[in-house]
Length: 638
Image 1: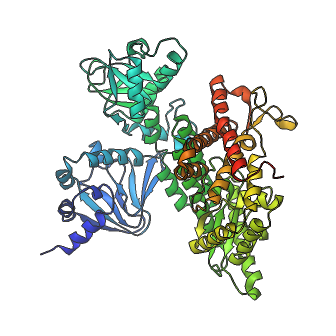
Image 2 (image 1 turned 90 degrees about the vertical axis):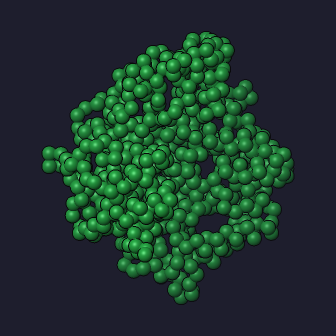
Image 3 (image 1 turned 90 degrees about the horizontal axis):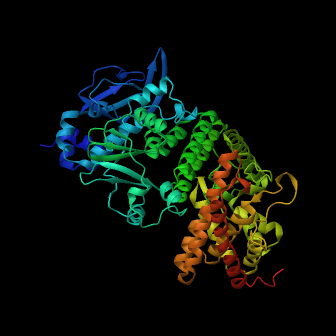
């Protein structure tokens, strides 16, 4: 006879990690032993310093607060939602709880018996890895130290130190190694194949004797100090710094700071005299310290005030900085920060709707435009947005538009407080020009396309890169269909867009010098946006529109798509995609360095290597402009 309660529990568990890694039979075995606890708001599950329970927990309904307390100070470190696992400490450390868990609202939690769970997962390495990672990322406040700029600063006693002390470092297992007899060329090939930034040199007994990083290769090989075939022993850093498994983040930080290193070898007994089992990197420390997009997104979704949204978005900037420093691929960075930006806008709209006196009179869509619409906005810049609402009878148009203008005012004000400046050209949804019904928007786009002029092209460069962030998808799809249907009726619009894309000459002068600003407060600075990035952005938009490709807004993705569609020009398009990402990274680094948009670069701050890399990015800009001149017959188009 089936146990219907156990079946329902098993069905719930299989939807969430780590239980989704188990067979249904194993889930039923666990589910029959699960305890069900009903909690009122404020009820406690366990307290700091309590002896470990026989269970760990998963939230079935409601939400659970985890907070750290010391000297009568209580600080929430996380809020667990449905499907989140907590109370994992007994599985990892066999010691009392370091946090207190209470119900944030009426809740139901399932208690999973540790002994039963272990009996069915003993040989499941995937689950063990998940549990250690989850423990490392959820058991403390991930932001207190970071916001104070102290993650890699002086390690002073405070609450953040206490929490970091019991964090187990999540280091890289099975590190890539090479023998002492290897040549540097062979070791570098191994690093390239595995896409890693360091390789450990080991002796015949697998004990670490040295380490080689990308910096070693750059400083000792690229500069000509050693030939590429030199033995690894000539350029490796030795001796290596070591520690044993189970070290805390605090210990890892201290050793890295003390020895000015970015990599720590983990050995069986913690010394250089035993077998290498792992490597802890600077990046691993950042990840374990909770610099996590998932955590930031949770904060955004729970925010009830603009102040909280701003705090969460600022953490996104800290995340961006650490990603740039760790040389994470820009495509990954763009995807993460875009998700964070969209989540901020969504929550800003939701909070604004709660302030409105009534529900929206009709369906509507909130659109991000420009760099936000292309999902390329990494730094805080000005906001460009628009609002589309469902068609209404003429006698209701004014009042309907008035409602959405008031809503848009609340949203744009909130975004401004978060850090997105008002658009100087007033291209925002609180402007009646950019808050219209679907039919009015269709008419607007038709006019831009069929009657192009300088203003139409300028506005098109912003409005044609829109992205639905919140609201009714069908409205936006209808608008998009109208745009592409209208584009089929004319070639003149493409010529106007093409002229815009080729108007900026090469960023280099006749003698290959950078063309810098000649006047004003930006004199001698290089405008990386107008002289380089905008040409690539305009070219990608024009080419993708001309091929009637919908749903590809991001510039580098547009070039990647074009590479698929035109194999004969694949190399050029891929070069354009790379150049766009490299230039965007330059711009972002400058913005982070100077706390601005990064638009203007002081070339004196760049190394010779960086200037050379910039120049290489300009080659495809010239080539793509030549393609546009021929394809859209622009040579004689004035």
